[in-house]
Length: 172
Ligand code: 45D
Image 1: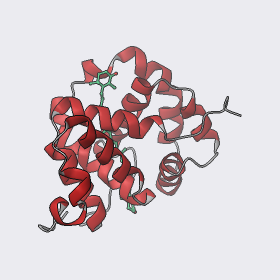
Image 2 (image 1 turned 135 degrees about the vertical axis):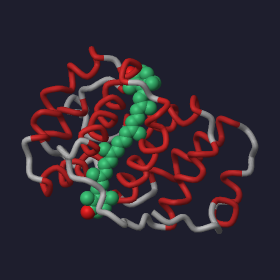
Image 3 (image 1 turned 60 degrees about the vertical axis):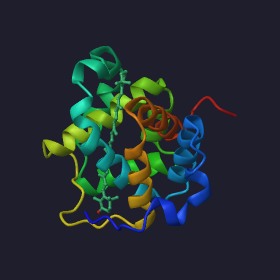
Image 4 (image 1 turned 90 degrees about the vertical axis):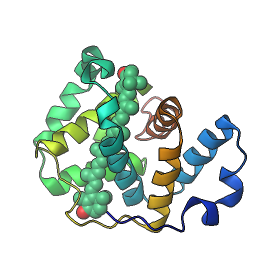
């Protein structure tokens, strides 16, 4: 992945120069949600590769993953193309069987689910980001601003982002 140097300060000057922490979280979240679906997936992936070391499997909670296990097993059995489609459906909030199954998870289970998907990517059981993949300029900027936040703020942004993914089958 290549990062461009003309990032946050030039393209999102107002959003990121308030200096107030909750604004940084809110604006990073808003800019993330405005990304294309593929950029959202790419930013999540790179966030995982950066944060992975700080998140211990114990912290994600075995009990939470148990709830997501059926869905994760189902995804592992899919072709790579189907796996990518499922993730794009989740990020795009498209109404699919997987999006509805995801929609009933708690926010922590949703985070644990994405974390586990990343682990499965590392193990070669879920489609990888193509070698030499170039993240877009917008994606790279969101990633940079995310990296500038402290760990707690990063988690807050990720929680807000994954909470809205999928489809709530009980809504309207
Ligand atoms: O061909 O329960 C592209 C704690 C391009 C504790 C692609 C916690 C085209 C409590 C779209 C790029 C708070 C610590 C392909 C939990 C193309 C608790 C593919 C926190 C192939 C849970 C893209 C947990 C793909 C945390 C496949 C912080 C992208 C968890 C896939 C954080 C991206 C988890 C994935 C994160 C990203 C997971 C699967 C950041 C997952 C990220």
